[in-house]
Image: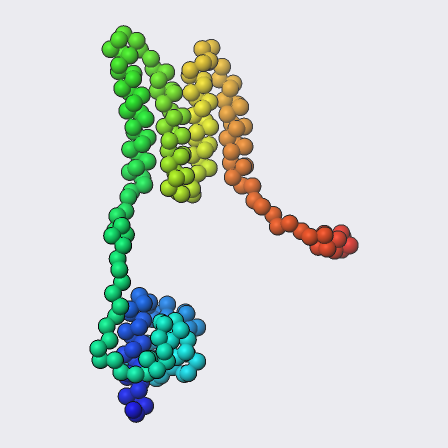
Length: 211
């Protein structure tokens, strides 16, 4: 086999193996520590990888170097089995919204039922407030959407103070919200606690000597 023919054979095999693996030229280049321009050059048949790179490719694609340099007219990419559940995507936002609205629906149902019995209990909604936020908080943790977790925790703590204020404090002392402000500060500070690397004795002793 002449060199030009060998380049074309290798080019076709590299293209087939790369596409079957679902890699772009840039991704393959990153795995081989080469630029995508080099990959493109090999796949156009303008050059052929050296022995070391061919060995890397063979290990990457699970074939032999001889396989990459040999023609394969009957070659077909392997068929990947698709997971039937892969395309099933649930909207976590919708699920959380349904759960929170469910809490308020139950609260409204209880309110209307008591109202029909000539008992007006607006405080039901005060109790529903922290329950709904707690539901939101729990589902957020379940679905691992923790990027806004500290805001939800702060909102839940505040809702507890609001509910307590509306349900039990008939004289309505607004000063209780001064405690709520301090509690909110504590919540945000707790989310900024970071672990520091433990220093060994030698490091501490060296720092003391330098000081």
